Length: 543
Ligand code: VG1
Ligand code: CO
Image (cartoon, rainbow, N blue to C red; front, side, top):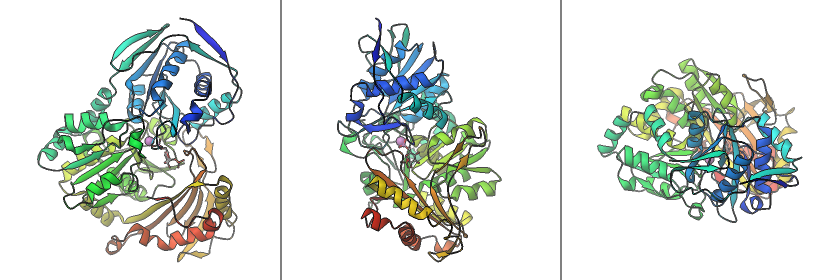
């Protein structure tokens, strides 16, 4: 087997976004496109000779092909060992755990998360560092810089490795170990949650429904919920990963997880429902005829953390992304914990967890997690909820209502306008920026504007600064309107508008969020002149 050095030219569109490089499969299939990005990553991450790399993906179309290419490149570039999930499958949180457990140098995760899959849809790749978390901005910038000047890549001339059963192989001097995709992750979950209590809850007739949306969490949910916790087989649905995710959009929200929503809002609905996304790091939590917003879910997990054995000793602190509602801040204040507000994307939580400042983290985009790994973790959130339900012996809706009663309710919603012309989207944000000087002091939606800014974050651990992380209109009463452009899409621009207002009065906690936020929604449209610029009169998705 010999190493081949292939000459190549840079592509000008390999800048990683919020979570790695995401493009249409057709783009990744262009000659040298994947290879350039992988070699640029290897060139940018330092000296890994003889070290371990973790490799796996969400099973989408092109996963297997990409894995074979990356294995041969890893061998040619001097890795000592690659741990690859069986069938090429590793959920994002499981990959994070395997990196940490094996003290790997880093990992490559092949996923475009909740974006649709198939030959005409999306593919993605991201590099995670040795702590198991997404590469911080300094690293992704170095990778990007390398993509602009790359002139050759290295690949071993060898045949493909069989991925479908566990085993050890040699690729040149490099060891390839095909590992069980679920085992280590399941052991980790057992160490955090009271499996006996959850098993008892389920045996007592508490019915659950978990929707893997034809994506990566299927094998994990089946092994853990059915195999280890004894849930009836029909408690899980769409649990066989498909290369095209069944033609669906594996984004666990009320719009895309409609199959589960129909079950949970039917007359004979189970007590608990949940779904996860393409790569298994997101979660949606539902009760019988009840939806838990991700921001509330984070706050509720924090307030009830001691129910779970893994968190019985208490939590160090909480972090949330800036657009996530301030519900968790109220819990942190009540518990005397520090609370951090970071830019969107899990990579910003890594330093805070490594430094021991926070235990729980969350994002409004259906992501919650803790320092057990360095990614958000869908199934972890499901098990955490089940553990709390087993201890509290009440319904999801009752837990949420009691939480609001104690802490007040942060009404919250996100409106997404997808596939908007990029220039128009930029202008929507600019229109708001242009009013930064005049808005403060004005009344908007019946509230006084306190201040406006472009959110900037200084990492308290390494002092790195990230600017332009969202346009904020902040009100005196704590309400907020935030505008941001998505960094994960693959065509056109997506405008996200995040709306939040706080209600302390328990007699007003039963409004629909869209009604409670109606005046704020109108105000957001007016100050941004969104309708005129984009020609849209309604959001594509409301969460
Ligand atoms: C979105 C979410 C963000 C999340 C990111 C990756 O990013 O808003 O909270 O961290 O996706 O999640 P953006 O830039 O499109 O708003 V995942 O599950 O797609 O890896
Ligand atoms: Co995801």
